[in-house]
Image (cartoon, rainbow, N blue to C red; front, side, top):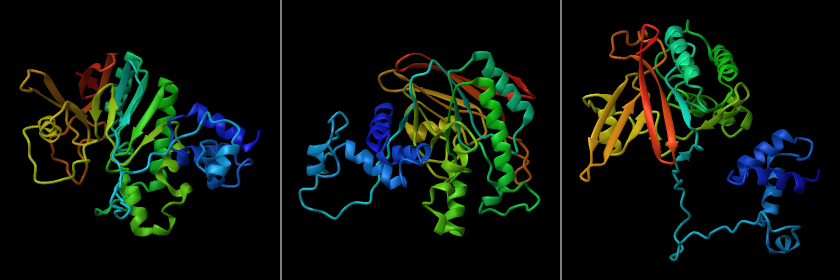
Length: 327
């Protein structure tokens, strides 16, 4: 196939993908057809009519032409470096199984087994891993225990876990990065900044080379049938001590929402002035609950399942796990 045919095929199958992301996929899957990612990107821009008016006139078909809206700038102000922050809209699934704060390889086998058993019972259509699936202990800027597993061994544990998850559930898996996953980029920026931007060293490449999942990064809100999910670190840290984690989330979002991160299960409901109910949730962790750095805490194990009956209509089961049993 010619480069243009390949580009049209990929664009037709992935109409909403950003050009650069799709170019990376095209090059990875067709390395003999394109000399590099930029070559694949150029071919995509060509079929989209973005390579100049002359070439636009000679393009075989206008099916994939995209009109690029010019930014509103009547006073010719300097070009902005501001970045747009858009939520990730998950496709509609009737049942989505939620797990967070597994902190591999410091997971709790009893709690994680109970969560998996609960998930298998409900036969979800998708799995959402809401951050801190890996711990990245040795990449932390906090004081590190040199006896703990090194990064490569953490990745081996992650690959083993994801292979097991894929074989058991056989459904789409979404993986949103949490604050522990962000330790990788922080380490790269501080210790190996020359490698930043090299695709093979990006955390997305490291993860997707070991697991079949879709990555969600950059602290993006994840919308599951109208219900927003965050990991919990997106609002930053501070001297903020609410009654419980869900109440704190309500004070931050003023909207129904779900978070992980705090390792506790909680729920808070308030009506607005028109009587419409808003509920916020925090979902418990699946890691060990007595780490050496904080053996005394108020944590608990948990997981969740979101049931969606129609567009915008959902219910969330926010389950506690105690001694390997779903409560």
